[in-house]
Image (cartoon, rainbow, N blue to C red):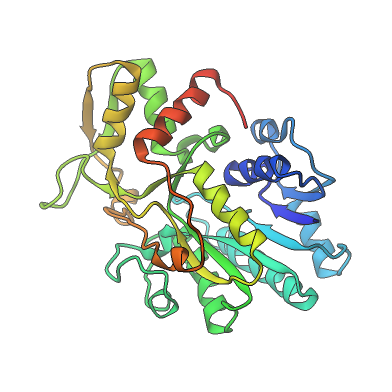
Length: 320
C-alpha cells in the first residue's frame, strides 16, 4: 500500500506514521515543513520519500506525483491565535482544495483533518451531521479555515467520497515542538514539575467557575486508531467527530496530574489575554454516534488512563 502523509513530521502525523510502520506499511511519501524540533518526530520512522510542502504542491499541480492508494492530509497551520488571514487560508483551505481535487481526478482515497474549532461557542451543538456543519460559526481564523474546507466538501457533495475528521483536544507524544500550542496536559506537566503549581484561566461566565471550562480531551493513540480505521475501510466516507464523547474540566486535568506526580494540588487562576477572550470555547463534547454507526467499535481511553500513559513519555522525553 502506498500512502501520502502530509504533516507527517507534526504531532498527529508523526504518530500516525509510527502506526503505519507498526502495521507494516513503509511505502509512504511524507510531506511537511521541517525544523530542528520536528525532525526528532521522524527519528526511527520508515518512509520512502520526503517532500517540503511547497515543492509537493507544485508537483501535484503539474501531476508529477505518482498515483498512490490514499492521501492522509494532516498538514496545516494549527495555531488558534494566528492572525494572518492570508497565510492561514492559503495553508489550510487553498492547499487542501488543490490536494483534494488531485485525489478526485485520480480516484484516490482522501482523508483530511478538520477540527472541533469549527463548532465555535457550541450554540449549534456538536453534531457532525452535514446539515449542522452548514450552520456552524467558528470563533477564530484557524476554525474558519477548517470550516471553509468542510463547507466546500459538503456543498460540492463530496462527503460520499472523502473523509473529514474533526479532531477535538488531542494530547500525547510528539507534540513537544508546538510550544504554546501544546496540549494542556503537556504544559501542565512541565509547569507542575518546575513550580509545584499550575496556572489556569479564570472563567468570565457566571454559571461556570474558574477552571471548570470543559473540553473533550482525547489521546493521540485513539486518534491514530480512528484514522487507520478509515484508511482500511475505503467504502466508509463522510465528516466525523473524533473525540471521546465526554467533556472534562481543566481542573480535572490538573488534579489528575498532581495525583500522578504525588503532589498536593495548587491551582492559581489567572486573567485570560484579551485576544483569547473573544474566541474562547468554554465547552466542547463530541457527538460520536455517527462514528459508531460507521463501524468504529474501539473504546476510547479515559482521561486518567491517557494522562498516566502520556506522563511516562514526558518523564523520559521519549518520542514515538
